[in-house]
Each structure stands twice: as C-alpha cells, then as structure tokens.
Length: 114
Image 1 (tube, rainbow, N blue to C red):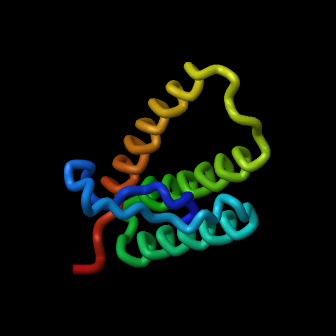
Image 2 (image 1 turned 60 degrees about the horizontal axis):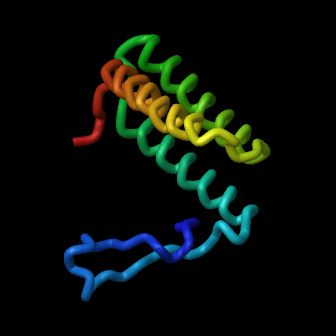
C-alpha cells in the first residue's frame, strides 16, 4: 500500500501481463505511519482474537513481541540509514530471530477459530 508503483504482481516470465502496483504513500510519511500502524494493530488484534494463550509464555511473550516491534518501528522513523552495507545484511539476517521468536510464541498459543 505504501510502496511506490513498482511491485509486480505476476512472475516476470509473463512480462506481457506485468502490472505494477503501489500507492506511493512513501511520499506522505504521516499517511504511511497511520496506515502501517493501523495494519499492525488490526493484524495483532486478529491474532489475539483467533488464538488463546496456553500458558504465561503465550501471553507475556506475545505482548513483549508486539512492544519490541512497535519500539523498533518508532526507532527507525528517526534513525538515519545504515552507512555500512554489511550492516544492512546483518539486519536482514537478524529478522530470522523475529521469525523464530514468533514461532515460539505461536507454539504457546492455540487457534480458537476453525
């Protein structure tokens, strides 16, 4: 939604049908923050409503995860881009820790919606 219109929806092999999408909201930082925030809150709320904590870990770790994600988002709003390209790579790989953390949290919750 916030990306500029350069995201292809179909594979490149079907270049005759490539349509690129995006609303260019990056040009409007306030709108980007509001929309990304709303999407995050909606997703978090849907996950809360469709799962139930099996134990304290499933409850506390989920809220800690959400807090860390919001804190990192706010921090990146005011931080300059990394000067070292290797740092960008390290940051990309560090996202695997968040995937593992989310998997661990999900393992301590059960689905309530069928």
